[in-house]
Image (tube, rainbow over all chains, first blue to last red; front, side):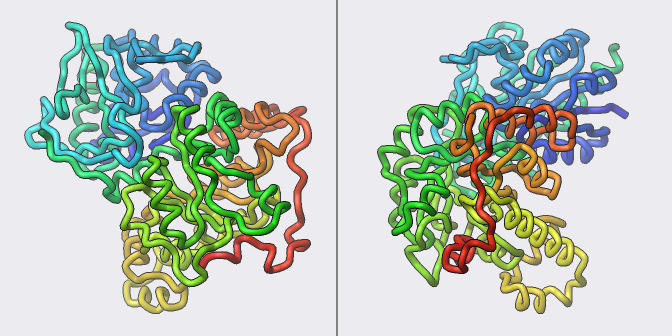
Length: 196
Length: 296
């Protein structure tokens, strides 16, 4: 069975753990970098990206996660997690480092404040029917390079991408009872495990 | 064009779910908001005065000056919450129109209506409300609250009431989950809780919205204690900016909330923090002075 971790520094952790289990994988809540060693995949959940970034830095997660990705293991960032995966965060004034793994440029809170947060049915490459996407103070991707596959857009904004072993969405699949998106990721982790 | 819907339950409750495991801090100006954001707060509550100062000042406590709220909103990228008086439709609508991310219908302010709370499912903006037991929690959810918090006893720096409220709600949730279906209606009557909400709690095995700790958190150990008791996150009111060293306190409380069972770490975080806010014994407050008695 594949073992998937959820970075548990802050945010919607239990929701992701539930989805992972529903997809037939073992779910682990990750609070220490050494827990990464026996995982096949890692989810960076939604939450407050500034908070999660600060805690990742303080508790030494950046290098171990970069090494994890380099080994070809699967990573999935939802909302805040997508921001943290991005190489380029628009207007980033934080002097602190981020993970910087995906060749994308993101804009934070790009759909407006909480009153503008919304739900929409989206077509996503790899899924047979529209997915109920929940956007909460969501970011979107402004630009990608050739290595990145765009999986979905919402009114011309890029909201789901894949780059090899990395997956990212602006929206929160973990807030729905539709397990297909996490299922897609569990499959990625399984494939990566077979290859390794 | 993709068909989109705003203000759904999932969007409102989901926003609170994104705050889980985090600390929401009371601030009274842009400068404090930046300190909070820098320390790793997941949101700030913009106020004119923190609860301990509201206690001291006496008189009627109202919604903050919109200029303060606006100033805070412009200063940080994390979500900004603000308080409206219980039942004050217009204060709530004003805050919603300003684009505040969450409204606390709060007993810290002087209630505008002594009979009715806001009908919160009529708004696009989500609401958080205080509760002391499952009846109060379920009534607020019934009105549309998308997030709950303990009432505790605000502005006292005394954790005892928040502990009481968190334990009570969680113990009553366990009771409901273990009930037979035919016992639920009587439970609804006894708890003063809407039947439909109790049914949801029983089916889901938990409250349908997150429940944070609030009202008396003064130290990193207080925050960790509340997480240990099952809080989804923590509100810190007067505890941070009434302490001797707000920046250090704020950072320590954030880390203690994440690593709430790492006692060695909490010990380290608590070293030489300086003096916490001065506290008040609940027994020294008359019934009228207890903010938790406000709301129905």
